[in-house]
Amino acid sequence: MTTATPPAAPAAGTVTGESPQVVPVRRYGHWVATAVIVVAGVLLLWSVLTNPNFEWDVALGYLGNGQVLHGLLVTLMLTLVAMVVGCAIGVVMALGRESRNPVVAGAAFGYVAFFRGTPLLVQLIFWFNLAALYPVLTLGIPSGPHLFELDANTVITPMVAAILGLGLNEGAYMSEIVRAGLQSVDPGQIDAAEALGMRKSQVFRRIVLPQAMRVIIPPTGNQTISMLKTTSLVSVIAIPDVLFAVQTIYSRNFQVVPLLITVSIWYLAVTTVLSIGQHFVERRFRRGDNRLQEPSLLATVRSGLVPWRRSRPPGPGEPTEGSRR
Amino acid sequence: MSDAAPTPMVEARGVHKYYGSNLVVKGIDLTVAPGEVTCLLGPSGSGKSTFLRCINHLEKINAGTIRVAGELVGYREHNGRLHELRDAEIAQRRSEIGMVFQQFNLFPHMTVLENLVEAPVQVRREDTATARERGLRLLERVGLADKADAYPRSLSGGQQQRVAVARALNMRPKLMLFDEPTSALDPELVGEVLDVMRDLAADGMSMIVVTHEIAFAREVADTVTFMDDGVVVESGSPAQVLGDPQHQRTRSFLAKVLS
Ligand SMILES: Nc1ncnc2c1ncn2[C@@H]1O[C@H](COP(=O)(O)OP(=O)(O)OP(=O)(O)O)[C@@H](O)[C@H]1O
Ligand SMILES: [Mg+2]
Image 1 (tube, rainbow over the protein chains, first blue to last red):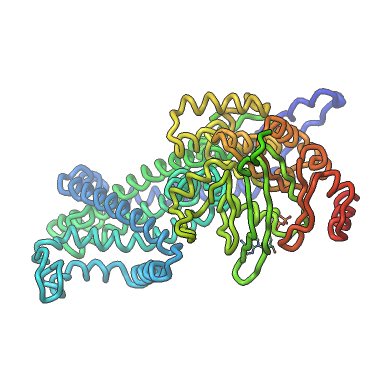
Image 2: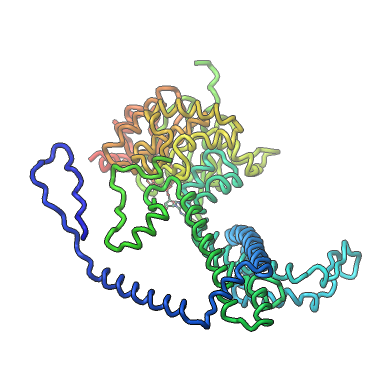
């Protein structure tokens, strides 16, 4: 079956006698688990593929449908914009929470508490109906001259309501993620940078943020993947995202299950691409940290598939990515 | 030597510092002439680090004045009142004072050479090529020319501390502050860092060194200052303070450190 890997050549100076062969522990539990999972997987796949009710030809046929593709584009765009808005708000609110001014810190705290504490669906519908509360948006002195006046119904389009709802909500979560990242940076780093004469803004941009990124990126990747699916909520305010598109189609032809499969395939495909992207971004921000070097994505997958071929941690003398730069 | 006393490199008068309601520096006077090496000794918690951090305004003092090369570091004097300087102005004055920390505090996301080049380029707006070239010469001087492209975490403690010294020197400071630069090092690595500091002192750098290395103080210092509980207990030449201490507190401290 498996041949034991020969032990490393003995270092110079040690006794070079007969070195005994090393037989690794046989992990029978792993083999049983693998067998059970493979059998269950094959059975599940077989039933899904052969059950005619899934109507795979219909599901696959709609993958390239124009309306679906357009909806997918809307979903991707919304995810991107909401995450950008969320990250920007997150950084501002994280800095606000750390402010020495108690009013600023309190306001940032209140923001996070409010937007995390109410359901996103409620917030979306609220923004959508803002015109009912404030029919006219003005900036100026109350009952005095106005700088400008806008009709709320024309400004708060469904798309604006969606971006406001998703972005403001995401900002509350991102602020906690950014804050944890900032707090993970050793205060000695700030001392050292300030002692070199760097201004506070330079210290933040050049020293603190790049190091905080290592802590910020992984949960932000998760947030992005989660946001991709959360955007499906906007179908309630009639935004033609990918879910809304398939709902429109199956309300006409009643092919509910195949079209839900269509949309699931698209969501899965995009989340997979995002996960791979996340892996590379994380690696980029781990520069200089030779304790946390991970094997490549392919190696991870390969060693994960074969239970008895474990990836070996790099030995002390071996080059790591940090030292190779 | 000219007749008129030169402007002292550091002149501290009546420095007080509170942490909350806790007074940790209780009226320190200290003068360091240009090119002079002062070693600060004292038991743990006596306020040595705090005082050192006040010199480059990493901590704000509550009373007294500190002048570096004749200038107040964090303030401007105007009509007999002290006006706190803005962040950019404080940063500018700090950039002339190098500091080396017990925990090295190298930037882990940058290579050794990037650590050296960062401040000259960001703070002084030097061009990268000039800063790199001078950085490489400094690395050679501390014996680490071959580590320019390594990341800090792959270096030993002694190597990291030598990089930290080179990083501070690449700003061409007038004054160097050392806060227990060898205390976090394995005993066999202490010597290589002290060698670099000895070399720097011989080169005429003004230095304040907080240390427990009595032999280094005896050999390199022009002045040894002994602090306890936030005040200077005694100060003088190494021969005086280390060889013939006048105060009981100094004697018992030396007895503990030297045993
Ligand atoms: N950031 C801080 N906040 C509150 N108290 C502090 C702070 N830093 C230091 N202190 C207190 O101030 C006193 C002096 O501390 P300091 O670090 O200056 O002593 P030290 O002489 O450098 O000691 P050591 O040899 O242990 O480094 C101690 O009692 C310490 O607890
Ligand atoms: Mg200290």
